[in-house]
Image (cartoon, rainbow, N blue to C red; front, side):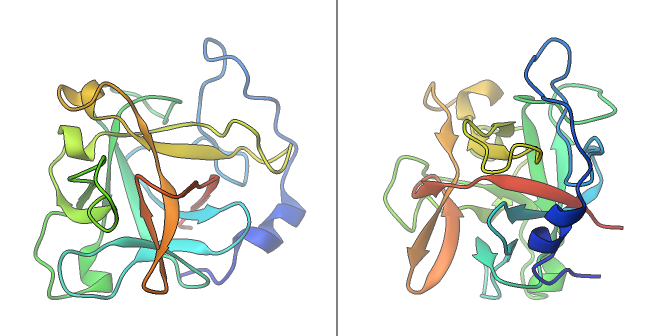
Length: 199
């Protein structure tokens, strides 16, 4: 079932979560219920301020956008580590079910940014990536200044060099309004993100 502005009301019921401050003792990634995020499992993603992340309903390529309602599910696939849970800064691929958003799109379900240093719209996140490649090499890090003290929130980055090529830097994923739509890409205001399990 797809949520409708689920992030805002869920904050009222969050359990207290201990500080995730040490990468050596607790560098796990948590959802809004305080549970560790699992690899190869579907999650909704949303900004802390409300709304959801979903796929655009346009012809290929499908882009990733911020929307008020009806989020899509995303899955995180670890690149090089056999871990039971997601951890801070571990490289991963992000995939989704393109058929639910656009049945005509036959591209790979892995997300990518082909031109992270280009101008909009070339630096937006889109479908058609390949697992464990520079243009699809994402990671989550702790959000520098969380909006809500008891809510674990994260910043998504594209880090091409970690997967073997590209600029030796990471690009914060933000949101940019382009032709009236809020697109995610290597530009704009960095997004503070949280996760919700699909069931």
